[in-house]
Every structure is written in structure tokens, then in C-alpha cells.
Length: 68
Image 1 (cartoon, rainbow, N blue to C red):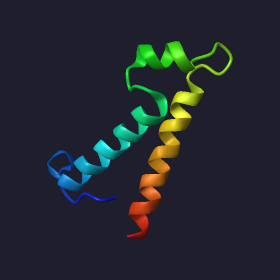
Image 2 (cartoon, rainbow, N blue to C red):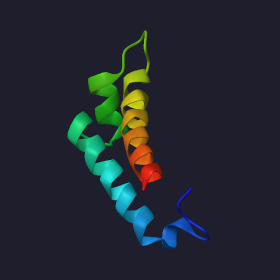
Image 3 (cartoon, rainbow, N blue to C red):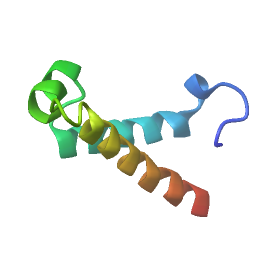
């Protein structure tokens, strides 16, 4: 969507990735799977809330970037 050649060489993608991870840690407390499972995983929902929060943050970033 934002990269023509190699994402790992694109400074904007690095900034967006950093923003995504910082927002995720701010909302969920960590990106560490053990921490997330301990605090958010349930037998019924499994890791649904962990994935949903990532999708919500990504949606905000993608929507904003699409409007530029």
C-alpha cells in the first residue's frame, strides 16, 4: 500500500510499525505472547481480544494513511 520496492528499507513503514507497536503496548501492556495470554486469553474466546485490539489499531493507522 505504501511501499514500491522493499518495506524493510522504507522509513515511513518503519515509523508506522513503531507507531503500531507503541500503541499496542500502551493499550495492552506488552507485545509478549506469554504476558498477553496470561492477561487476556480465555478458554472461550482464546486470543480474540489480543487480535481484535491489533486489528483496531491497524485500522486506525491504515485509515489515516489512506486519507493522505
